[in-house]
Image (cartoon, rainbow, N blue to C red):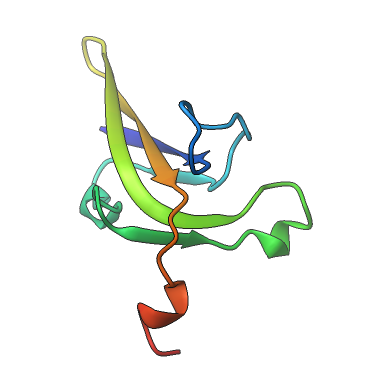
Amino acid sequence: MNYYVDYQYLPKGASRPIDNGEVVPLDITAGGDPSLLPNVGDYVHIDNSLFKGARVGFSGKVRSRYFRYLCAEDLANCAVTIVVEQTDDDFGALVKE
């Protein structure tokens, strides 16, 4: 099974995530380990500064994960959408860097 992952950002107080295109270019092919995807409640920081503005970056807490499966006779794909919600939590207090 191939997994295609899309992260979406939900600003505080918004009812729907904003449309910001591809955030993390991540594909997990057959034999890969999708268990490393963040789960609901996990904190996420996405720094896309090396893409020079081509992709947005943001921080927050995973609000939801949505899995869509497309299956054919000998092919299976899964598109995963992970919604990251803006939070007032102090990210500097989460880990010591």
